[in-house]
Length: 365
Image (cartoon, rainbow, N blue to C red; front, side, top):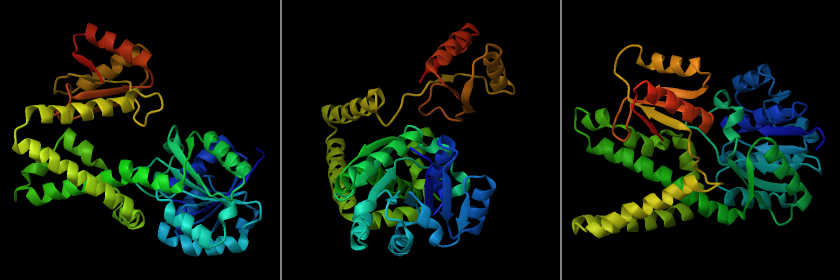
């Protein structure tokens, strides 16, 4: 592909990460950005991610080969109207929203079916805004594309190639199928996590003992409850039918588990946990699964000054690169209090051998 010009309407976490990845993969790409936050635009210019910054959509976007709609979904109608007035005939329009049916409907009403491919980079963070965007956010993440029937196949293929260039994995789906899938694997889990946090909040004692002792398991399963309330309000209001239907199925499954508990059904409870364990493990073992097996270990260490530094120095002395290291501070579901993550299995295996020779108890995770 020749040098391209990309426009971004909205430059938050996702838009900013795509823009960074584009600049990294294709440094000659020209990026034009529009965002209501002057500080965001200043920072993007200062970091040489954006070449031209404007406060509102204007004629600057007329030279774009691609325009990414990255603003909140409630802004789409106004942004589509503004874009339609300035975009060139050959420009491809896409978005980054996690719900696709509403934007497809808005695009149809705007008469832009011929140039639209919906997009959903399946990556994110509890942190928001351009300041938290990063090139690596999209690496090896599925990037779902939902083309309209009218968009030329060549335009879709060009966007698919662009997605691959920035390190993501393109996957083409019908937009309605996309919304049902994401309701199941993303939207419902957020509702469940928030509900569980609220349950503990409402059930806790006045001195907050539940909150105080909440450890690894609870924090892992409820981590996503720290996401933006406004964003998830909008998702629930735009993918309502799918989320509601799946929530009803989930409530039914919870009632079935409750019945097994009340009946003290040993076999039923075992099958419940064993079935989920087997299916969950298949996510890690699948070559293209969404959950990748990490190269990490847990190490039992003494709770005293210098313990962590001793291990880090030992591995550094043997030229082992550490990707991440930290104290877990709980033993609820961990066999050690120090977790060390590596870039590859070879580094992990060398480290296990070194540490065990020094008498450390090590478990591969």
